[in-house]
Amino acid sequence: MNSQRKNGNFNLKLLSLNALAIALVAWLWAPQPARAGSCPEAAVVERAANALIAAARAGSSAKFANAMKTYADMRAIALFALGKHRKKLPAARQGEFVEQTTQFVAETFKDYRLKFRADSLRIMDCRGKMIHSRLEFLGAKPAQKVIWRMKGKRISDVNIQNAWLGQLLRTHYDAVMSKSGGDINALFRELKS
Picture 1 (cartoon, helix red, strand yellow):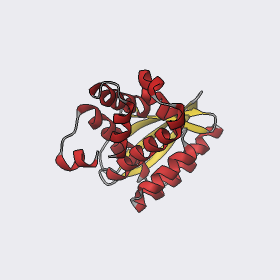
Picture 2 (picture 1 turned 60 degrees about the vertical axis):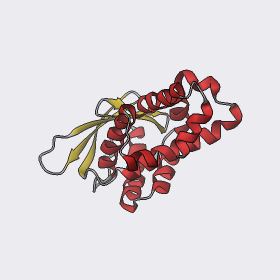
Picture 3 (picture 1 turned 90 degrees about the vertical axis):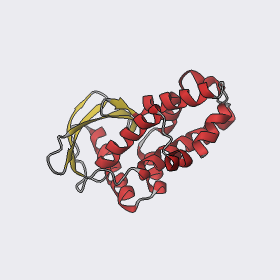
């Protein structure tokens, strides 16, 4: 993937993932942490915000990955992203796949952390398993809605610019799998590159 970035050879699906990463990283740079809303799950988002802000400021994909492992259900996100190809993932490689997905997302977040700078993220309300928040940018740029899907005390997905991270990963993974004739090893190679 790094060679694709260097050569400017992006595909449309990857651009969608990158757009989501840019918006999420803008939230990460918010100088003040999110304020916990009226539900206990909002406190998870607040703690995640602190960890992700620190990762963005450090420019560290390792810190992004650690924050995701701590606060997000990366196993559920990674396996959801496989979609119809999930049956091709050997059970013995599931842990490796989750780790590679986490690293892929963390590296993407790190690469786009400087593209935007937000003023703050405010938690607006809690609606069932969804935490609704608003990303407020510096200057005249309008606020951006961010929705966090929770599974217990873990973040199971995030929606920015009307796109869910899990679905964007699924679209990207499906494209890689389709291009390779359904070879799961091609997806592993893509995630490592």
